[in-house]
Image (tube, rainbow, N blue to C red; front, side, top):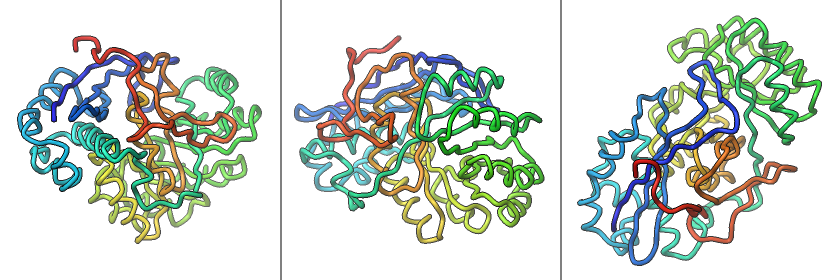
Length: 351
């Protein structure tokens, strides 16, 4: 198996703002693993907030290439993705980089069997979950403009602790009947979360995501006790070990495969969350169709989905899973693996 890493800069259609940062370009690394005429693709968005830098991370990924080159598709067929990851020594890599390798190997494994990845897993084939479309934090007029320019059946609204948070939802509600998910991005206090939950429910909000800073477990315990809306963990649930900690203080968890290290740990997190009575959402970063097509394989295992990362791009270097604008449901291409295919020569800026 041969590994190559291709850096890309993904231009955004609009500036994307949260309480953590604002950006107009998202650097990303796309990993390609080649074996016996087949390519597996994975992605690691270089999110500045998590301290990731393209050249350094590219070097760390390329350092596993010699170990990978000693293996072939028969090793993947015999031992599966998890065993190959162990053999090439990925335990010390950043989870974003482990995720890129995990996804590329899953893509390759499914292509080897000639089937779409999700169809190789035990899933409810009739279960269909729509993805939301995210309206980033901005002045109210700008958020209204973005919502009106992109009709969608369900939206995630980014808020951040300002005095106008409720006014934002009221104003957006004037322009759509679609359900809202609200992501406070750790920007609220416990009192705000509790007091806002009632008016937000009346305005058609389905749940609140990560209202408090991760350290405020006492406040979160009060929120789950008194808020009238479900509350999902995001920053408080990044790895497998975090799932247990969310039981009793959250209604559910939002899993991001880049944060937990790939599809293998994500599916274990889903199973553990279900055993604890937690709802499950899968989210994304700002990433291309390579990453989104991988996350979309999880859809039948979820309650909610936020897989709009590629829709936020002005230009996508790949094609793959898309979403119906009327229903929000995934449209899977007739391709084995995750369905992701690079549209451009496998060489990004500096690649």
